[in-house]
Image (cartoon, rainbow, N blue to C red; front, top):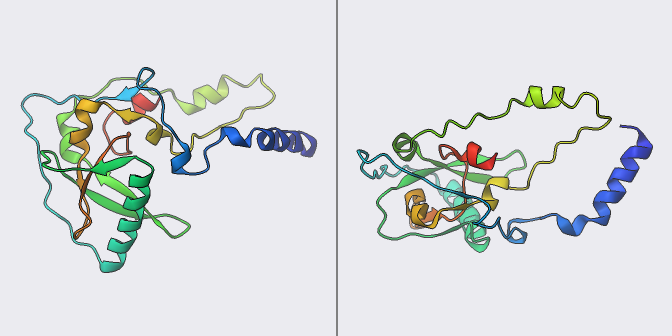
Length: 184
């Protein structure tokens, strides 16, 4: 990008910086009237509870910090009397802290596939070849701006190590079948 155009783009972004979320708590989520993620399950599947996994004391502390952040942002809430229960998979980010991913293999097996055809990125880019500028804007924690259908929140329950507790997602996390189709 030419320096002059780059400077204009940066100026535009700075002018409207209040339109962007800079942390989890600044994201109110999308209206349920617009979109929400549902988790229909096949009748034959019974709810499943995964056995607990072990983690080091250091990882437990980092998990607890991330859980506190997610609760404060209202992405998750404490869960009691769960039927579906999955484990977390702490993943170390490039900058040091961990991100909590949840392993939903049983729930995903019980969920029918949404055959929504995802657009192929290279075709989208090729379709824009006559335009001067093409930008990619990634929504900050985009999945977390889509709510889980209220009647399905209980299916997203997950267990944390030690005495941290059991929680469930109120917003759509990564790892759920059909989440990509809902996001599109």
